[in-house]
Image: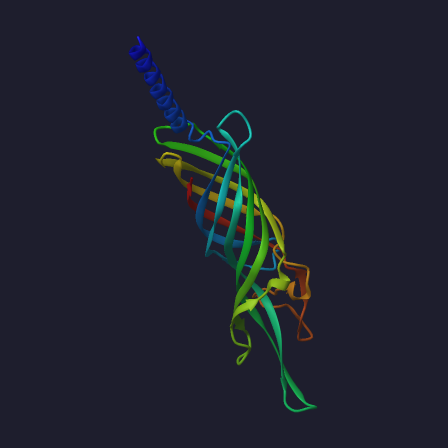
Length: 270
């Protein structure tokens, strides 16, 4: 009798252990919180909100991002999550705008010579942001080893760096040369806000470890430029160079544009 009870108890313990193990395995995506690491190459561009920029200047640029992602379950259903994280995102684009320039040369203590040039500048922007996504994430149950998701929400970004490369097309000869790595932080907005639409899937690698792959569209709606004198664009004439009155360029509007990009997100949830 004792032997039968001992065997029954042992069988029950083994059964409970097995059931617990199976529950943990099947509830892999039912955790209250999980985190992961992600890398995000992206293709970005700058979309102007005024007509004074040349349409040929809408040039895309490759960028890169990386960071931490987190999911929080906020209801009884494992299919609805609050997704967030913190990412370092580098992206940009290029615009062509009319430009004038006054070159001043100091000859001696009392004499200066100046030359006035006008033309166009193709400016390529490289901007770095710390970005926090705030997303509602909806996902399917596992289908085999895969589950699929769609997420919608906001990107909140804080600018940390901003540089530009300028390539000039002057009307006159012997005008100022092209410039690289110009620090333009003082002329760029500190914050940006936009819509984040992301979809993709997860593949279970082992236990609670999932491979994450997604494609995101990031459409920002805050002006990337500050209201500074350096961001007053010249009024363009028909050929794209500044409109001149008495040999001087006419000031047009303040620059208004937003940054957009498409990202490929590859990561691992633990």
